Length: 78
Image (cartoon, rainbow, N blue to C red; front, top):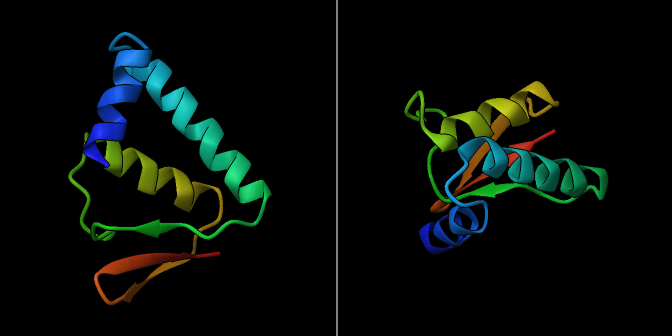
């Protein structure tokens, strides 16, 4: 996952606002297609100010009501 973020960051020439814009659009498109959202890290304890925290908070803003721990992963519940 870190490699994907690094590639995306290079694609937008380090502009984190542009990276967030692309990530947000991807999340919106996936939600519109009724896709499931899974996480490899605990969404209940994201470090404020990190990109992951922004992503978790955005999903909550657009309707995620809970996260269920399934083995080593976390599933977003709509």
